[in-house]
Image (cartoon, rainbow, N blue to C red; front, side, top):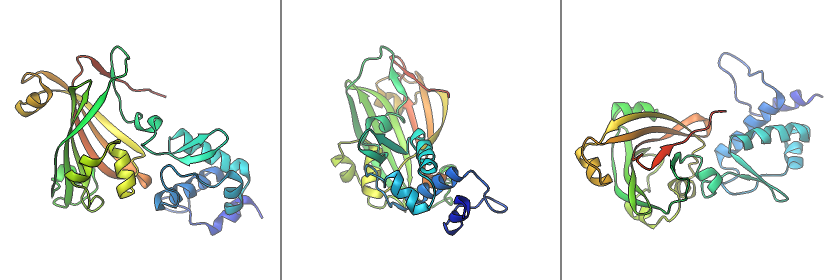
Length: 255
């Protein structure tokens, strides 16, 4: 019996309009993503060895290795020499800073600080609901956060999250958090941000934003609108950040 036929017993994702015809390693990748989505292996935990996964799916270790290589390239898994392969977590700098694109012009590391200005529940506007794949008026959690570098306010974030997924998110919980926000989402709510799409535009500071960022009204700011997705390409966060760029720049790598 071939490796392909052995996978017929697995619950593989189906393409629109019929069966999904894809290379075998892509099918294994899809099965691994299903396990990650279900929380079978938590962020920071080791996944089974390639030998164990090959036995589980009744395929060769080479097929499993190729699937894991792709997930590692996507920063969903992390290989550690001599230790195994682990589920990526935002507690790790390699993953955390993948989502932070504002860099100091001089390249020197800055001491960062985060202050939660607001955390409340409300109803999603039509625009936010569409971005989060919700119905207009569904419950959301709205956060406002001020990020500082070396004590200077630099980024003002407005964040919207689906209320049903973040029912226990409060100012008190956020105040106790000393790690990255995405790390808190992983640990407390089982939500992993695995990819994001961003839109960037130049805007002018309004009165409230100018006061919080210590700039003048109408000073130029960089607005970064981000929609973050968890497994299965499900949107779970909308974030609009207003950034000062006098001493910083937005950095991206095109591959």
